[in-house]
Length: 360
Length: 172
Image (cartoon, rainbow over all chains, first blue to last red; front, top):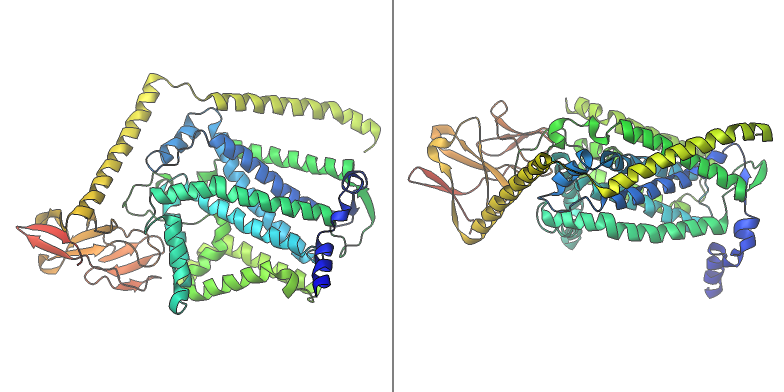
């Protein structure tokens, strides 16, 4: 029993592989038709790097109090030289980061690359994605405009009622977490302070710790090749590394052009971008960010309990994929990915129209 | 890529890399130094800030008042309208609306949507209250949820009328 645990740990953390030879000189990457999937994690991480740098640049100008928050964002956008660029980069790059993270998850799932010994790599990855969504949710409130405050209100109400269908004391967690995240019964200065702390200190620390484990495990086990038809191998340094850097540079160029030319909030109508004023009527069109829509639209038309229980089950299934999907064939994995991807695209792009049709 | 091609493209790559990097660095430098505002621009910014501060002061006063008093003046009876509600905040500092109902009796109703907490609009939509977030309709007289995702009625706010004036009272 004890030996089994030790052996399992040894398989997951083959630390004897840590040396200069293995990590640098001899490190190789398999080459095959689907080699492009190896770049997706790096692209996600590169977006995270942009987030860190632009976030640090925004810090000295942003003011996390409800009196000045909105004005400080206006100041950054209209007065600070290139301020709009930094802010736009931060916003666009966050969307790109989530997009690449999701594609990364899909490709790893579809190729069944999470198998032994990479279970922990998968799990840390899933938690990283959840934290990334947490970054998105907490960052959304900071501009303190009509959209951000009202969307946060809605999000917190969902959290608050998320456990209310359970009996007895199991009812309480939703209420408890919502109240303590808000620092009260409604969105106030306490909420902004908490979200700001989460967004710039607490979540980044957790994220950094997890991404170190994630990267360390990727290094230890190397790129997954079990389910590919490997044609040959190429050296990590310099071949793969140069391609990685080239892709990052290209990605940065794309982001730069987009951030320079398309304001991230240009898709919103004016009243949504206006300063939030307490107790003013809510303008029409309150929506979360696009990456929450797949969950948000079902909440509008289906019974809340069903959606909440359903998404919890899906989350557990994703987190423990290496256990639940161990014996499922690759073909079926591919079918699941196809199905889920279709659902995500349809619900995100046409969800609003579908909700309207169902309502009528 | 062969050596000849590599050498042909190398200068292009280097020049564009240098161009983009210097441009970005100069932007970064300007960003860090911050803007130089004219007196007029600065005055405008301060004016906005003062407005925000004043709004905050009035909100804090509302909060203090609700902690100390049991009965708070909302508006005169004659200011109430049938189709447009007077906005006020109840004892929980949540938004609420006051209307003139049947027989000119006041109706004081919470405007926090019972679905997901958006604020209900203060103008009646075909005689009903409308929450614009997810299109829920409520009956004004009873608060009953008529249509849309909201199922729980909007709660009424307890009030008294004295000398043609409407007051909200603390729930004891």
